[in-house]
Image 1 (cartoon, rainbow, N blue to C red):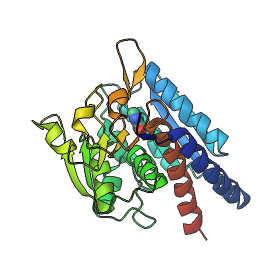
Image 2 (image 1 turned 45 degrees about the vertical axis):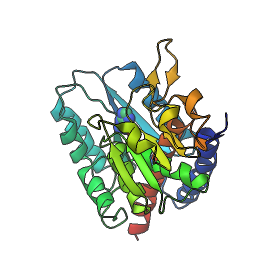
Image 3 (image 1 turned 30 degrees about the vertical axis):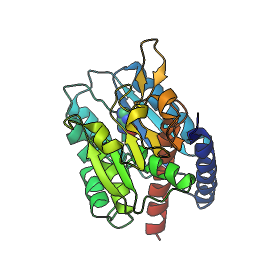
Length: 291
Ligand code: GUN
């Protein structure tokens, strides 16, 4: 292996320690940052994700509530819960775990979350604010946690995207699109590839930074990577043996890349960490806006 590892667990610990300090300082001022996590249905994967999110909050001294609902919960009932949480002063962040059951319109639910509490960064207001470079106090809005975590990983290894060619594989609203926007804001030249890209390798071979966010094993192999490139693997897949793996052929690509994130222990912990950062930010914005 020639590539150096980008350790998401270690970086997470550092960032979570600084969140814990900020949480303690705000609690001193009488405001404990609070996150509400809403889970509808009993998907085993979602149960694990939300449990990890709630535990991470508690470990950092944030207040967090987990609301679990049966898969039969109606859209109107869920919207009513979101609206109540929008008005709840002890809650600064609201996260509705996706996917939602098919009878609930996820977009409608996401749009019902106050942009001031949209710590997932999925609200159309957050997406718009990111697009025009105006995430912040007055307009509200938050950076989606996974791409935010990827940017922190680049920063942690001293890689400035300015002037680099970044190739994002995947165009989801949750990862691919916001990732491309953040890299663009950081002055990278950005290419977005996706399932309709006929010759993926043509682009990835020119890339200084590759972010793979497809949800399919072995999308990126060693022959597709320029020596020394930074490779960030957002994928979370199960291989034939049931083992957790990313989108990148780790064994092969780590012989060529300069830096690489492992799965597990790479982007995954960073996503939760940036949720804590966003919740902290939401609480600080609220506390600083209230005299
Ligand atoms: N489902 C998979 N990833 C996420 C995420 O980051 N946030 C939410 N709310 N649901 C998800």
